[in-house]
Image 1 (tube, one colour):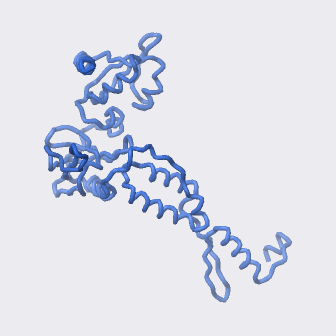
Image 2 (image 1 turned 30 degrees about the vertical axis):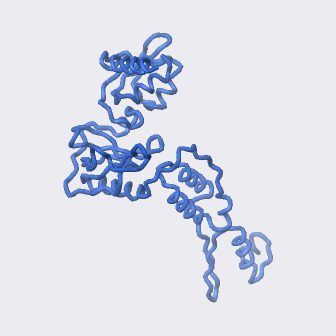
Image 3 (image 1 turned 90 degrees about the vertical axis):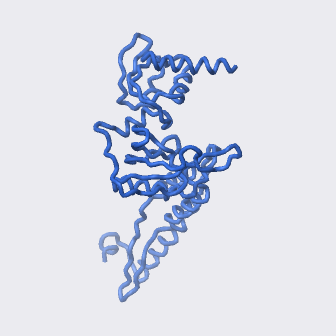
Length: 294
């Protein structure tokens, strides 16, 4: 009646059925319930094809997901698009060649750590490393590690890390999740609360490649041309101050170690350490040590 009255279209009792079949052949998910009056229902998909493409690219490119698990996840994601749209999800993403990790339990390890964070419990686990033969073995020095209060899971530089407080070192540190041998044990003991004022986001920004090192308030003298790089690393809320016409200053609490010094060196003098003197001395000693090996 609506088609006739509002659109001037003549219809037959099979008109709707044939139109529905056309839509189904085109890839639309329409459920049919047969009765004295057939009922049709459009099943709206949870993800659009463009969204699935983006998720599949992320899974394919993620180093922390083992290759077999990656292929398995992509197959499941592709099925969400329906048989007619699946061919559109063939991707042509080039992974950078570093290779996938070998730890096939990674997703379960992440899940266990997340459970411990939610339950506010301590965890313990075994770490692995590579020997001279490139074999994965248990860490020689620390075969059993207890990490108090896992605060957060962090994805940085295509690796997952767990950030938390260590009783042994009496400090906040991080561990790469793919270097954990198996699912961590969630202990009955309650986790140590986060220190007052601790900001996980700021900790991540000022810890270079999540490398554990003593944290020191450092002042940097930066050429005006490197502001983009400073904001990319520390974020738009980085503490910057006027220097001179060619430079500005940055003052941040930073994890001072070799990764930080490598970052400084890469600017070829456009980022310099202004203070404190102890950090400048460490940097000089590292540079001189490298020169002596030439």
